[in-house]
Structure formats: structure tokens, C-alpha cells
Image 1 (cartoon, rainbow, N blue to C red):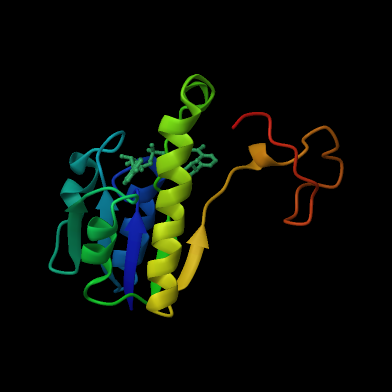
Image 2 (cartoon, helix red, strand yellow; image 1 turned 135 degrees about the vertical axis):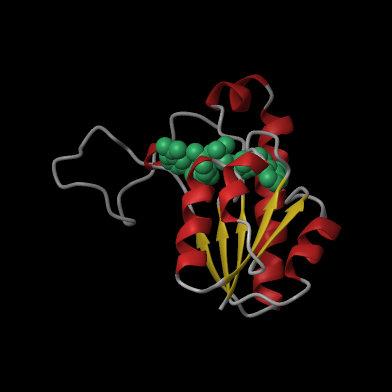
Length: 143
Ligand SMILES: NC(=O)c1ccc[n+]([C@@H]2O[C@H](COP(=O)([O-])OP(=O)(O)OC[C@H]3O[C@@H](n4cnc5c(N)ncnc54)[C@H](O)[C@@H]3O)[C@@H](O)[C@H]2O)c1
């Protein structure tokens, strides 16, 4: 199976990439290294792993990542500093949302499965007695 992991050089991405490689997948990481680090992937290097330094909001970078095909796209790339989304909404939400759309479109063109990693912070966290499910009411506390 061929997998693309956006944000694959980040904190969570590194472990996702490791798991996919352990399961025998071919993995392409697309990461601009704005918060990730190639060293996170250093001990994972093998002929089934390629790393593209690029941005999810740049179509050519996304096209390069998808060029060899894709069965599964795990989308982890995002600006994760909440304060940045408050101080500079256009500068953070623009790349995040447009980039996500660009990756979604590429996944659709390749008929790939798509896993989007959100955050529990999109939900109304005042009533957690019954845990959180996807149907839980949303009430984001930040952009
Ligand atoms: N770590 C957590 O506890 C947590 C909790 C809830 C949700 N999440 C979500 O999981 C995902 C991964 O989080 P993480 O903790 O691994 O963060 P991280 O910052 O370590 O990883 C994100 C990666 O995305 C890359 N990136 C950022 N903007 C990019 C862009 N425009 N184009 C290409 N690459 C870009 C960064 O360089 C980084 O390597 C994020 O979407 C985050 O919101 C994380």
C-alpha cells in the first residue's frame, strides 16, 4: 500500500510513518519542516520512504507527493500554535484550510482513502460525562 503522510516529520507524524513502514507500506512524507524536523525520520530511512520538503498549500508540492499514486492519505500537517491562529488568522488558517482542500482534492483524484486528524478542542467540552463522539456538538474555543 502507498501512503502519503502530510506533516510526517512532526511529533505525531513520525510515529505514524514508523507504524506504516513496519506494516510494509510505501510512505511519502510531505512536510515543510516549519515545525517538524527531518531528524525525526532519520532512523526510519529505507527504500520505502521518501520525504518531500514542501507545503500543502502549494499545488505543485502536493502533486509531487501524489505523483506515484496514493491509496491512503493521512493528513497531519497544520500550524499547531493556537495563539498564532488568534494573532494572524489569515496567515495560519489560510494555509491550513486551503492546504487541506488541496490535499483532499488530490486524494479524491487518486480515489485514495483520507484520514483527517482534528482535535478534541473543536467540541463543546463542557459536558464530557458521556465521552466524545463525532456526533458531539462542536464549539471551538479558538480559530
Ligand atoms: N499533539 C497533540 O497533542 C495533538 C492533539 C490534537 C490534535 N493534533 C493534531 O495532529 C496534527 C499533528 O500534530 P503534531 O502534534 O504532530 O504537530 P507538529 O507540529 O509536530 O506536526 C505538524 C507537522 O506539519 C508540518 N506543517 C505545518 N504546516 C505545514 C504546511 N503548510 N505544509 C506542510 N507541512 C506543514 C510541520 O512542519 C510539522 O512537521 C495536527 O493537525 C494537530 O492539530 C495534535
